[in-house]
Amino acid sequence: MSQDRWKLYLLLGLGLAFLYVPVLLLIVYSFNESRLVTVWSGFSTRWYGELLRNQQLLDAAWLSVRIAATNATFAVVLGTLAANALVRHGRFRGRGPFELLLTAPLVMPEVIIGLSLLLLFVAMENMIDWPNGRGFTTITIAHITFSMAYVAVVVRSRLSQMDRSLEEAAMDLGARPLKVYLTITLPLIAPALLSGWLLAFTLSLDDLVIASFVAGPGSTTLPMVIYSSVRMGVSPQINALATIIVLIVSAGVIIAGLLMGRRSFSRPG
Amino acid sequence: MKERFSGLHSVLQGRDGRRLSRLANIGTPYLWLGLFFLLPLVIVLQISLAETALAQPPYTRLWEWAGDGVLQIRLNLENFALVLGDELYLAAFLNSLWVALVCTLLCLLIGYPMAYAIATAPERARVLLLMLIILPFWTSFLIRVYAWIGILKPNGLLNNFLTWLGLIDGPLTILHTQTAVYIGVVYSYLPFMILPLFANLSRMDMSLLEAAADLGCRPFKAFLKVTLPLSFPGILAGSMLVFIPVVGEFVIPDLLGGPDSLMVGKMLWTEFFGNKDWPLASAVAISLLALLVVPFMMMRHLEQRLGGEDL
Image 1 (cartoon, one colour):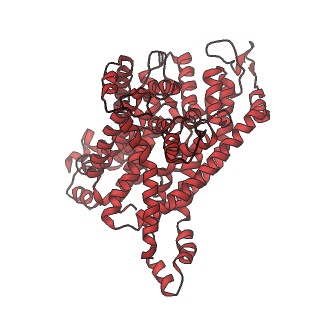
Image 2: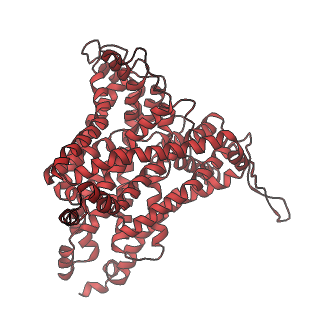
Image 3: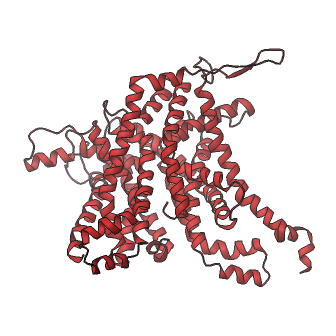
């Protein structure tokens, strides 16, 4: 077995190179002086400067961040409730459809989610005059709907691996169930809540397709700006923007990974 | 104990508390998903049976009160006739399935050795390696697809590199072909294959392999006879996580694909945003949904058997 290990690690290394080289190239060429993204002509940070003066892009980024933060907060609440239901309420009536509804958004093609939610919002607007126009609210609702499913997966696995003896001890000492949940359970699953929040945040920040369907004329999110710019071809400004996003996300993931701790990574299941 | 019978406290514990907890934990997510996930799909089905109209919103109503309390219902099946009968749509559906199938197999071929290497790596390296797999999954999808445009285009990094090596004379045409779509999809979905495979392989009982070795089984044969069959649930879970979303993929065929790489997600997008034909776009969505029900149910069945651990 051991003489085959180096072959296995070679394949792993090649796979990781495949995953990382494109993004690394993107970062390297964001410091390229030339407007032609793929021809190196010297080190420069001019594209970062231009990025900071691009008001349309900054507005879109701010809108996206606000949507992502609101979405993540609601998604964590709903996802945690759903995880509680699945782990703590056993075989309740309607559990099958409940799980079905919670799994489907994970794999449902984005075009279907986007189209269906837009049609819902249009129908609702005709019937009850809400939502009045599309933008922040409709995009956030759409994002919560699929993010909460991801949060539920993360929280559920933490909740089902949790040691329940502390909760039982508190109950034996007369603490009320709600108090036990708030003071003991929540702190114990806090790392999962945080990584669920971060996951929901990045999923929202990343979404082009669903937002394009449910956005109104005045609300352009960051991925929508990137998309329309990318369709025109590669641009050094997008490289600079990509570098910033990759660095922020990597920092977030590494922090979340450290918080989640070694245990939950190395012993899944 | 006296507070057990006083107002709010009695609600928060005992049977009432349990009921309240059920209501919050089960009821709230149920209501949200029913309203914003299930109901919208019903509306899509309804509009797929309507006709296009020059109105706001741009479709006809399915029912109308024709006076005297008579309800008129008009169902229009032409959208489905078009989607199912038109050669262009048929080609798009077949090509989507083909791309999803090829890419799922490629992800499996590349991802299996990676997942196996990580699952059998020393404990400390495993955490780091797993993090390296998860990191790209968190990085913007759009940006990762964009990275390939700069690499694959005619005067892009790959062609420049191959020319510099002297391997090619003129630039290869890769961007805006089906090959570029394969590369983009495999690149974007590889972590979805590796993670469930890893979860499965890391739970495997390695003493089975030792037993096989003790009984004189060669390592490769032991892999075929023991490891591969045992990892089948992981293979299936990873394959479904890749296959189902890829069939409806829009961004990758739009940015990397060319005219020959027609896919359903892109057709739906064009019908909706380009032709403003909402009923036809809805019919495409319903057909796509119907196509994905079988693999989705397979995934659900598997998930229930495994208790949701792999997904």
